Length: 416
Image (spheres, one colour):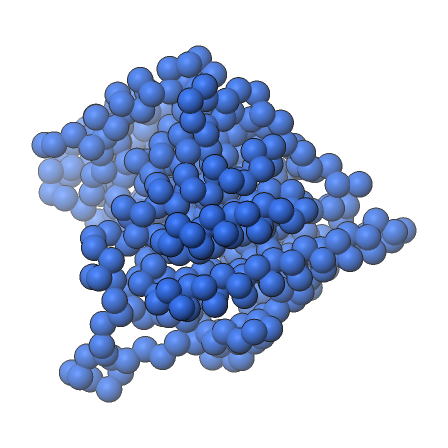
């Protein structure tokens, strides 16, 4: 049977925020919760034990990348993604839908998950005429039935349909999987946003129907390589248009999903409005995952506006490049000032890196190009974000969330 469920323990008196628990076959997730990104079946540079030491409760892996290597069927033969990774906690997989965006309209163009500045500044630039190789062709092409990808490494062609995405995710064996969707850039035309949304809605229904078919088959099998009956989340899209966002929330919310993802590439100033539009409509008794968001200010917003989960590569990507979160904002350990700084990365932090090493030592590791540098910075960054969100949960239960938000953000984003 499907062991997935969600319960709400406390809600904001005025607002959408709430504290809850998601029950999965591999354990509970106390929400709100930050989800670590393990793209290729690993949180880069960290062992499962190190991940657990940060307080992370759950990880999300990337369907597209694991499909390419080592292959979803190979993962299934090896006993499923939990066993392969050595991770015994809850596990999510995305649908591969974000690759529609990252390998399509955004490929080689520098458009990110969250864009800053005015929307007109996001219009894709014309390729440079300085060199023939400056133009980067799209390697994902969408049609009514699915998406043709060309592998980013080999160039081999692959075709994803909603059904294939669900098949792959079943082979991987996550506790929570996502319906196949099309993520659009915020600067797409109104006509294309509408067309893509209708396509996402058709794909959501097909994903759900195929999930139910596989679930029925799996429940009636006498022997299974691993006993996981996944929950499935539908993904709300609609770009920056209020009408489309609400239309998507109404439609996706009406389907028999176990929870919901909020997808899209956001214009920074539009994100809060879009989240509020969507969460004001989605069934409140089911969990909501804001996909690909991790900046502290955005996480406070997401929690306040009713999101329960959120994932982002930022803590480890930043960490691998010398960037570190502190109570007073980000620092860059490649800056000269930290070569003689004997303080921990953050004097208010009790992670493994902060308890044992100085800024000067970790800065030395970065300058020496030692692998340990990125590992220590990543441990700290994930710990920092995870505990920031855990503190949000604690203060929501205590009724002091807004005070905590004001205090944290005033220090983190202070003017030098």
